[in-house]
Amino acid sequence: MKVKNSVEQAICLLIIIAHSNDEKPLKSYNISDSLGVSDSYLKKIIRQLVVAGLITSEAGKKGGVCLSRKPDKITLLDIFEAIEGKEPFAKATGLVERVFVNELKEIMDQKQAMILDAFNAAEASYKEKLKTITLKMAMVERKKDS
Image (tube, rainbow, N blue to C red; front, top):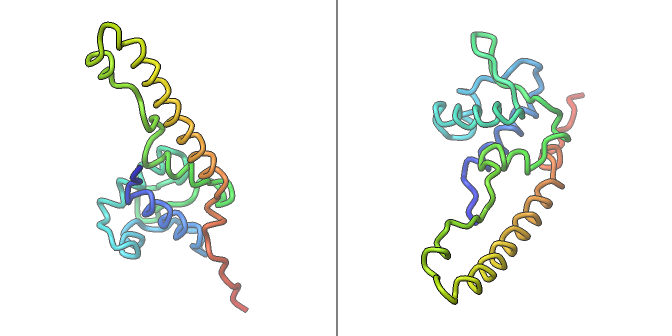
């Protein structure tokens, strides 16, 4: 399985926002410079994170982006699903039904179910692991200025 580059970029974006010492929202163009991506591309990622409820975004001179939740309440699964979506990794397309007919159909239906069960179990395990890691755990603790 291949994960989109934008998942990694979303994680970095959220870490940058979380590390912001200001209570002020961060501007997308400042973040895009840090990530080395175009502002328009970053805004697509921001939109996905807003829709998922992980960040808020305010337009205008005093606007920008802020976390919607504390970093210990955002998991890698939240971020993954915000970018990749919640569709199952594997699903039947109907190919087995079209290709295998007659006496093979029943056997192939069973084999297809076995294969889909394996993918579903792998997906459940994958997502369960992502659920155990929070954004806070991915962050580097910064020393307080004395």
